[in-house]
Structures are given as C-alpha cells and as structure tokens.
Length: 244
Ligand code: PGA
Image (tube, rainbow, N blue to C red; front, side, top):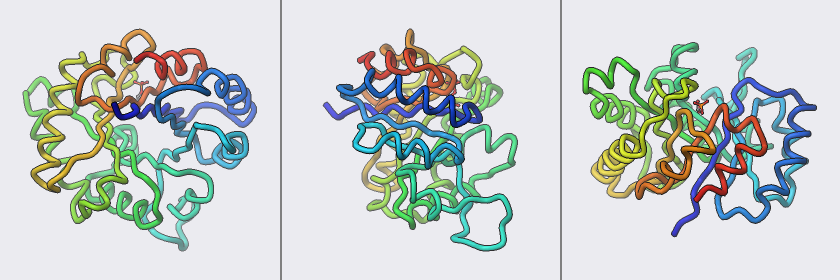
C-alpha cells in the first residue's frame, strides 16, 4: 500500500522558539513512521526548520505564494524564494479564499507558478456549509478542480496533491464523516480521470484529530490528511501519523 501523506498546517501559529521546541520533540516521535510527513509552516520559520530537518523524514511546505517570478510586489513571496527552503506549497486554502478573496483564476496562476519552479502543490478545495445544504457539493468541487487545474498537463498532475477540505469542517470540531470524505474523494478521482486520463492523491482536511484520523484514513480513496489545530501539538500530530 502506498504511504499516506500527512501535512500539518500550522497556519499563523508559532514563532521561532516554539517551532524549534516542537521539532526537537517531534522528530524522534515519527522517526520510523510509514507516512510521508510534511509541516506547512509560516514563511519566517522555513529557513530555521530546514536546518533542523536536514536528513530527517519530515519535509516542509509554505502556506501560500505569489504567482509572479519577481518584481515590485511589496510583501509578497515567490515560488523561487520558497524553493530555497521547502518542497511543497499550499494553494487555495479556504482561509485565503475567504479573507484574501482568492478565486479559482488566481489559484490557477499560483499553481502554475509553483509547478514552474518545481515546487509540489497541495491544492485545497471544498464546499461551504450552505453549498452542502443545497446539495451542490459536487458542482462546487468540480468547478474548483477544473478551473484551478486549467491548462495543467497530465504529466504535472503527479506534482499536485489535492486536499478536500469542506469549509464547514475547518476549525469547527465537526469533521466530515469517513463516508462523506470518501464520497467526494471518489468523485474527484473520477473527474481527474475524465480531464487528465489519470488521477492523483487526495487528502482530507477539516477537524482531523488523533481520535478520528484512523477511521478517515482507512477509506480507500483517502490518501492522507491535512490537520490544522491538531498539528500544533507534537503528541497529537504523531498520533495521527501513527494511526493507521
Ligand atoms: P483544522 O484545519 O484541522 O484545524 O480544522 C484544517 C485546515 O485548515 O487545513
């Protein structure tokens, strides 16, 4: 069986001191883990974490990027800058869609910019609470998938991991049930096969905990998970990683 992909999303938590403490405690806990492990850290922590993680089985992700290669874009960070420290970048997280008004077109530009620099992409999508209640989940995720991946080659699809993150489950303590996650993952894999002739890994995010991870991760089309809150604690994250 292929290794599961577990990415902890630290969001805007932890300073340098917190991050170093975390990593020193976390590394031995997951040394022999069977999963692929990634920490998505704030930009400021990537250089120090990279040093701490030399020769370790833990990889790094940035949580965002700007799509231009370089230029007068005060406050922005390019794929090339991230590539110095990390292998992955998260694109399209619902918090960026909500607070920074990122739409599918912008997300598509960011995905292409990341792939151009050989960064691997963790591409997030998912429906809102209202959309689920209106029974339009499949329409919404189809549109996010098709527009987000517009113009991307099937060859490049293997450098993209899709994260299904229903917005109503993020930070709410109300995770999707294993069956709800599996249903959408299955649908997305079918859609990918229709568009690209092949599929890619799909991980689940939204209130994943050390208690519910095992039941979600055992679903056949759930290739990993993206815990936020639970990734801030070494023991909780290690438990998720070892839960299957
Ligand atoms: P959560 O966050 O696990 O705290 O719900 C997941 C995410 O936003 O990626």
